[in-house]
Image 1 (cartoon, rainbow, N blue to C red):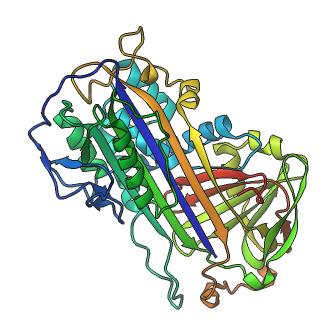
Image 2: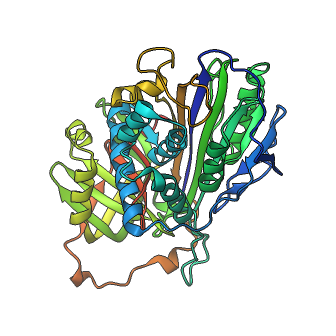
Length: 453
């Protein structure tokens, strides 16, 4: 079975008034190309429909850090809290997939240029528990661990999961971005600055950025930035893209997939392809829910939380770090007879109002107004503020990649297991995809109607 996920978060900053022309800082030198996603991330040339002049600070991305496990755990804990803040304010009655990891990365890059109350509000909303001297190095360490190559399991000829992360900056030609800002993002995010002409060719610049995003996500994210979001006052767009592909550790047999009924959150009954497997895996029953952990071939897993009939809203409203910790404590190996729908959908989420509701107000306020944005860590002139934060995600679950199932069996006698469990995922459910060794939530969402692609 294969999971495909592609996610992009974009932060666009505009000037309150047209900024004057200036040169790129002297240590930001033309490079061989803009950033491209590898594992770990690196840089490459962007093939896009408008002219792009890539520059980057004259420092390589750090491939090793001094960040401790405790410091990384603090970053992950903050990301986890932010993840559920986003979920609670974006979840409705429809299918949803988010990458809180991607949104946090894009906003943390933006935070590097924030000052004063703007920085304080961003720090609070993002739950950044580390000092400014550690935040960006910790984000780099997290990226390096998540994208680290995974060795195949002996006897298993399938490719382990692949996760690629790419960061990029798209700035106005001639705008006086500070050398320190470019250096920090180059060193910790591998993000080069691609110079475009927002002032004279805003639409071409939008198409250029969208084309880069589409390429970095294997064509899964298209037309991320809608028409009109970028205009002649845009000065900087920061982008984080993540693409994930993995086989299940214990695959579903496609021959067992059959159409079955699924009751949507609205109470309607739809017919969907329902996959089936009898597997030994972690399972728990709690207050109003059952949960199962489905591992990937590699250092990641999906946690599926299935509320009891009539309890979806109740359980979804309780989805937070404490509930997930409760589930993790209760998970124990069972023999599970599992049925789960095959599904595929995408979500587009405009996050500006969500972030303002969480308390990130100054960043979206014109600098000339009381309490306005302060991004003087990007450029000396105080004229920049965030116009939009766009997020798009795609997810697909199917049975591909099941040919190497023989090496995935866990040989444990049934006597050592709790009683067998049956889990029929025939009603709305929640899911989290986590990088197991760090605990980072890569993707988070809900399936309320798998027939709605």
